[in-house]
Structure formats: structure tokens, C-alpha cells
Image (cartoon, rainbow, N blue to C red; front, side):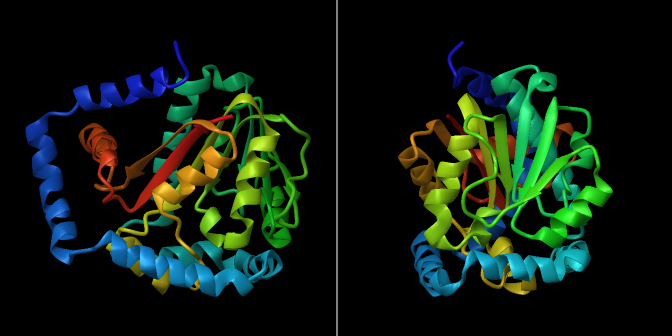
Length: 290
């Protein structure tokens, strides 16, 4: 089976499991809402470019300082920013954790034999749900305060802090590496190095997973504008992040949208996967092989 076949099978099975009439009933109103707002990709690209240029003066050290300051209050700030959606941060953590496990198992097989790295792990919010799943679970972040708190909360994870440049690991150390809503906090001048370092620490054939906010989604734009933590965030477009990974010699690079509908239950979870081909979801993810 080729490297891309397992992911193709995953999405084919999702499509087959959805009743089109139910899918239409659950998602039509939300899709109409996006159309009514008249969001244009060109307008978003222009806004993203202006913010990208403005953030060139922000350093990785400043980002680390910002997250050190909010580490003790991080979850409260996030829940406040997303409160209008009616769900707490943990719901979205669970959705993305399940997607990480699903994609990794379909791509690499037995999870218990894998060494995994969470880049930009912060407080380790995803780690309780990954306890005992992988052979080794590591986390790294620029915020030393966040790492200290993560060590106290999750002693089963191996944590390190770093300066945002070279990752503190040997070449080809990990089978899979993931970063959840991290790259938009990296100064744009550091995006290329971020992707290159992710590739360096992955084994040949290793899997990279990136989750990011969708800059074309109006609700996402509202949340980012409302959240103090995201004051310097620069949202990356799916095409932009695909190009970064292809330029870093990754293979089988692809993106899918997610959270177009709340993935609650089997029907809506399958519907969200099908709608991933349409750029309307609140977030999206990238998968790539080294």
C-alpha cells in the first residue's frame, strides 16, 4: 500500500458512512451563513499579508515572554475568547486529539511503537488524552513557565524548553511530530526554519501534522481579534503552509478543513470530514511525510 493510500481510504470510508440527506440537513444552514457573509479570499490574503509584514519586528523571545506571562491563566483566556460558540476549549482539544490518533494510526500503524513530539506543546493540554498511547511522548516549547507547569501536571511526558530556533533533539529522532495552533505564533521570518526543524527530527517516512486556524473563516477571525494571546498572530493560508512543507522536501503534502460543523456524534463527525474539502471550517490541518 502506497503512503497516500491509507489516508485516501480513511476519507473514502468517511464519505461512504454519511447519509447525504442528513448531511444536507445538518450543514446547509451553516454553509449559507458563510455565503451570506461574503468573505472573499483576496481580501483575507491582503489582510494576512499586512499583518505578516507588521509582525516582522516581533521576535521569538517576545513570544516566549508573552506566553510565560499568560501561562497560569491560559485556559481561562482561551475559554473566554471562544465562549460565544457555546463550547469550552476541551471540546476542541478532544476533536483534534482524536484526529491526530486517527491519522497517525492509518499512516504509521501500531501507535505503541512510535516516538512522538508535540512542538509548541504549551501546558500539555493534549497529553492527558495521549497517556500510554505511544512508546514515548515528548513536548517542547519556547515558554519555560509553560514547560514547568506541564512537567508538574504530566510527569509521564518528557519536556524541554528551547529558544524557538533549532529543536533540542537529534536528527531522525521521532516517528511523528505535531504542532497544534502554533505556527501562527511563530514570527513569519521563522516559518521556514520551523518546518525544516520539524523535518530534521523526523525519521524517513515520518509523519508531520500541523493544525492551524482558517483565515477564511469569519468566526475564526473574530476569535483571533478578541483573544489577547493572539494579538501578534499571523494566520497562514492552507496553500501557504503546503508550499512551506513542499519546499522543505516533505512528500504527500495535503490539507483538509475541519470544524465546519460541530463534530458531535457519528453523523456530524463524518460530515465534518467530508466538508473538509471545502474551505469553510474554523480550522484546518496539514499532513506530510518526510
